[in-house]
Length: 139
Figure (cartoon, helix red, strand yellow):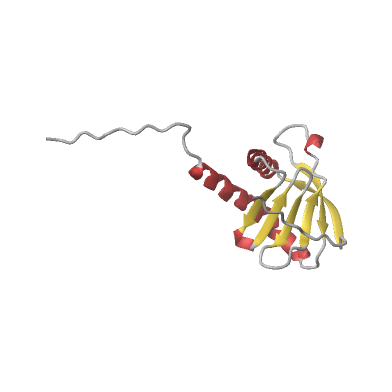
């Protein structure tokens, strides 16, 4: 059974153009592609936030509070870069006043959360095939 999460978006109190580091964007897209779903949930434990990524944006909500979007990275434009190593332009929209503080550390916390998610995925991926052998006892 699939669960549907809903989030509320208010009116932006601030809007500005920003750049997302290439490694952060590339790692997020790789995890999103492997999820085989229309969104990817990324818990940011250190900041107690939840990032939700879809095809067009990444939203951030307080994981302990209401399901109101605090800020979003919208209109991600990877096609505007010349190589995979160039940063990705996007529009930062802040919806709640506390988002003005949150935005200062969120990009680094998001990168750390992506790394943790990748490591967890590596640990839980099993081999494609398994073989069981009987141990021979020594005499």
